[in-house]
Image (cartoon, helix red, strand yellow):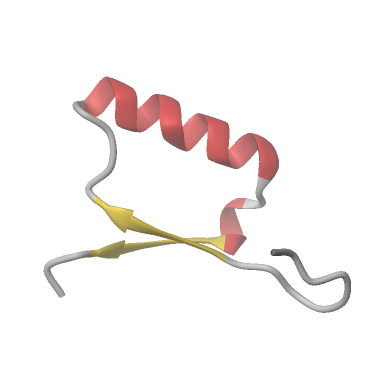
Length: 46
């Protein structure tokens, strides 16, 4: 669900991907559609 006014943010819980290569590929796809300043990576152990 995206706001038509204001800001949108994307929160991703780490780790993601099956290995380093798939994590990098997933991240590249994310930054194609989102500004990197709008993506927040959180560690699920916190």
